[in-house]
Image 1 (cartoon, helix red, strand yellow):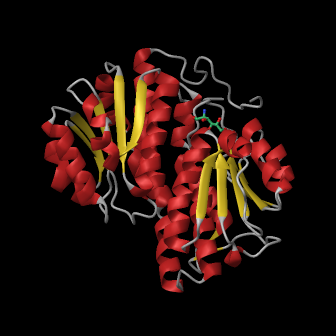
Image 2 (cartoon, protein in one colour):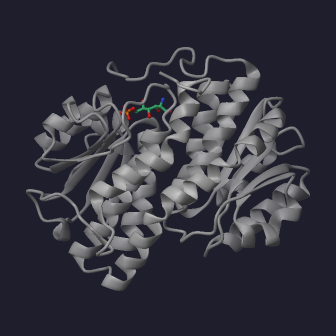
Image 3 (cartoon, helix red, strand yellow):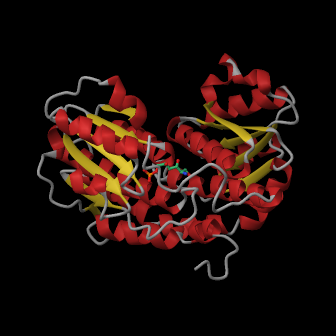
Length: 364
Ligand code: M6R
């Protein structure tokens, strides 16, 4: 049941520190500061390409994984939504790996893409929450997220546990390819091990998110911006908001603003910016300044250093813990989930069962 929570979605958001911890437990050796992936029937060190495919929120997890795999493992990656990949019929390199991500393990298009990959000689690996599922059954290897049952139609803990598994996989592939040394692996695993307690700190902002949601609930359109591995978080934030609050939202790579979407900016369009400190901070800071100069009002998610630099430019700020930029996508998922949740509650929509949507999309 929902216990003390008003909705399953809120319960599942608050379960994240625990289920991320459970998932890390399965894929990390905390003492050795090493990733421990299960034995697979193929060599992770020698993949000409990894092709990542999924739908919806799982696709955005895959998009973060692309950034991680390229950066940490120097692994060439192709990424596409399942409904496009399967009918585009792309050539797939011999000996390539196709990676599928799915909470339910039953999504029709993802399953169709898996079939396509198998028919084209790919090794197949799936990240699923439901171990007894069609996608798990048909894959050469399975990495299970230990999110437990997710009831709310809006994916929350499935997403962050997918990210957790994919972060471990990126490190594992990096080690196999020889692109990550033991010191870097230790630093990244250390950062991952701290995620559950950092996630609990982020959940303390629940009240603040409710306050910000009062403003967002008035909006007709909302923009989400991010760069680098935060770009997929912008897309995920927009998806979450539209699916449960029915407010139109768009996620953009912040660098694309001046190629069109900046024309939308006025004081009635909240602009949610996910901007942890890191190598791309200066770039996104200038995007925030441009937004401000056009009367736009920014909701800024950043850390202490980031807010010191840019907090004055924002109508609302939320301070997240300072972490290695590698793990930031996992933590920044939480405020975007809470913002969508509280906005939907204020609007009075059916949060756990939004209109027109099914938890598991088993038909095309
Ligand atoms: O079960 P799956 O992970 O394959 O589902 C994929 C999407 O249908 C799912 O993530 C959907 O986008 C969610 N409702 C988003 O919150």
